[in-house]
Image (cartoon, rainbow, N blue to C red; front, side):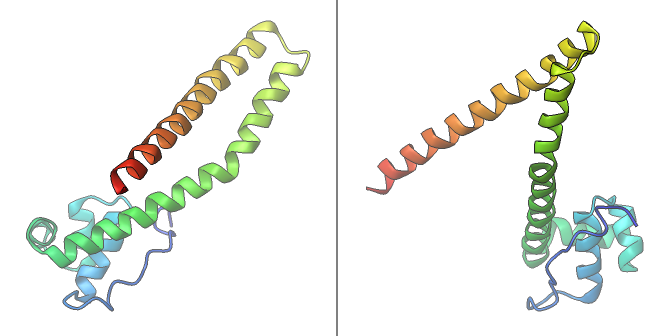
Length: 135
């Protein structure tokens, strides 16, 4: 079982109008399977999954929710291990390694730090805009 297949997706069967086959297809698609792979898991044809994915509003909404849950789970994992990654780079920069190893560690961490700072700034600006619009 892959990590993506083990992700906890919300049960969709409680939503009115979704069959067990649709639920299976949603789980497979959200886990990254192809349309054909999802069809195999669901026991239907790829054409049926395609039709659900493009024409069935309940299916489309449930698939979006499942994909959002999968992405949120991945982000949580990245947050969990990011401290270890930073500590590893820091240790490589501080250790008596060859200069090229220390440079590579620094070159790895700096763009990530800049990108994280940029994301925080964008989030703050967006929040300020939303607050102004809400008034």
